[in-house]
Amino acid sequence: MRIDIITVLPELLRSPFEHSILKRAIAKGLCEVNLINLRDYSTDKHKSVDDYMYGGGAGMVMMIEPIANCIEALQKERTYDEVIYTSPDGELLDQKASNSLSLKKNLIILCGHYKGIDERIRQHFITKEISIGDYVLSGGELAAAVISDSIIRLLPGVLSDETSALEDSFQDGLLAPPVFTRPAEFRGWKVPDVLLSGNFKEIDKWRHEKAIERTQERRPGLL
Ligand code: SAH
Image 1 (cartoon, protein in one colour):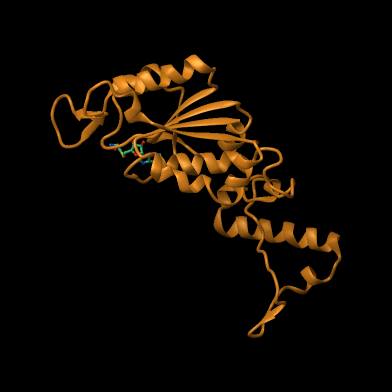
Image 2 (image 1 turned 45 degrees about the vertical axis):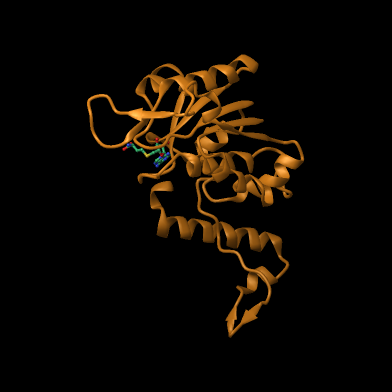
């Protein structure tokens, strides 16, 4: 899979892909992530990418021309399954959406800034708009990192234990059960006996019960 992220702040986005699971996925060649500096596609000498809003009002708007040039340059090289714009008014990202995006081959993610992007970009270039929650961020970079992370960890071979993503919250419509590690007792607080029993059938049953209990308590709407 290839993810091309268009941003005015590539430096802001570097770190999430340089650690842990995402770093290993990229090193293993399971995924390629490119940070594309939108300013490289600006046509004026100041490399500007934003301008005042038509009709007046506070805040700048990202201009159509650099974004159109950038997307078209990428599309000349290969076909993209989706051109995604991160936006608070997009579809809310959930596990189902991440699962479905993880099956795609080439994705563009466009990060907005300021007041947003010229609406004509959304009308003519964007195929999917994704929000990561009902709150407003300063820019789309953190959203792009969240979207990419949730997709990349699903790619076959990325997680060392192949079943591990399947047991995460939401995958089976349930929240994940509680987890423990050594020591078995700390300040008198004990790990549930069943987890130390070595009886995997009982452990599976306990985990399933706890997952249902937790979902009922915290997210009954999922059941
Ligand atoms: N004026 C816009 C918000 C602009 S915030 C509005 O009210 O809808 C600047 C940029 O941050 C947006 O263009 C978008 O790319 C990104 N962004 C902000 N909140 C986001 C969210 N919840 N999910 C995804 N992207 C978001």
